[in-house]
Image 1: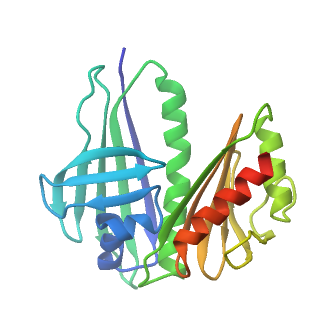
Image 2: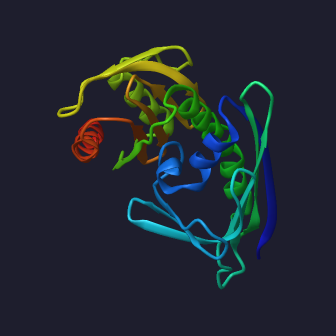
Length: 245
């Protein structure tokens, strides 16, 4: 049985409507703050695609008004599930912009867990968007993704291992300083800007680094704004795998 849902979020961003549009309505812009590797055809009827760890999800663009409104919708699955996204942009005096996001659709039998995960995720994603626009304006980031199984470790144990490897306190708190030396890319050295029960984010001079934990799995979604990102992804995958091997 499917269940309808709707999540609405609003945030004020330190950027012009044109900058916000570039961040939400172009593939490189989306890569700089959201999940996966993204492609977007800039027209009504075009395709918006996201690839995360080899899993590709596509949606159809249903509204495309540059600087004002973007909307998309996935196809309806055999069980009735689909997702729709709408972004509404409004400029404010002083160079800031209000962005309103509406995420709606139909969820499946595990709808409550799915809904809770989506509801918790959006404030974090909008925080990352704000960090991107505030600290890396005019640049685009390359996404770095890594995943590693963590065996029988519980989510708190995975979190503690990640924190320890990054020289962070447990529990991780915003404002703490992180440091790590993965083999290959430059050392990670920066400040925790977000910490909740599922993930934490570190901002450095060259990127936004996000670490997720759960029972049996650890994930990383990074956005790097310089350097050899191909080597960085392989190096971070090696670092994460080694941490839980």
